[in-house]
Image (cartoon, rainbow, N blue to C red; front, side, top):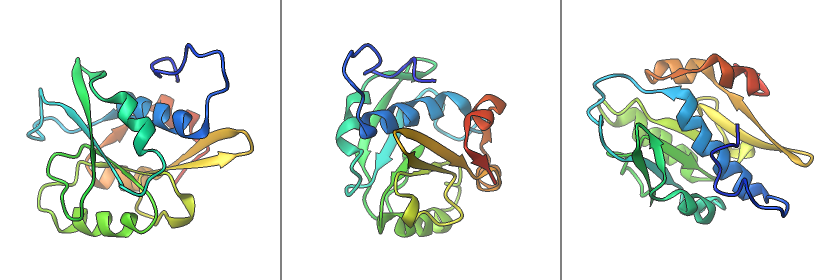
Amino acid sequence: MLACCPWSGAQEKIGENEMKAAYVFNFIQFVEWPQGDGRAGTEWTICVSPFSPLKRTLLALEGRPARKDNPIRIRLWEANEIDDCRVLVLHGADTDRALRALRTAPGKTAVLTIADDPAAAPADIMITLHRDGDRIVFDINADAIGKAGLSVSSRLLRLSRGAR
């Protein structure tokens, strides 16, 4: 799963944030967005909470081809600004604000939500990253993903710690 990670060739131990950023990159490869979502042929914008410890490591993905050679663009998420976000990486108090913004934005349901803070992840977050000893694991909320009009590869579901 980590074959596309920019840190995969390093001989040194990969840190937690680098590993989580690699997971975010790979999630894009295994999630399908609906056809005609108005963003075909555009950049893959990953919006990240300004408070997320992942923001620096996610910036390493800037410009990398995500899918169909469309480059990844990283931007800091600002309250209620989700127009071009395909993925929202959330942390702490930003999680509830972002989910409220998604619920009230007409036609903006096809946004993959990922929490890197399991303690602050409400039930409608789609993917939650966890540290389990020296490993990073993730949970998938298949119901939330389905409600958003997204679909997850069965391969990703098998890799998850649990699917709800």
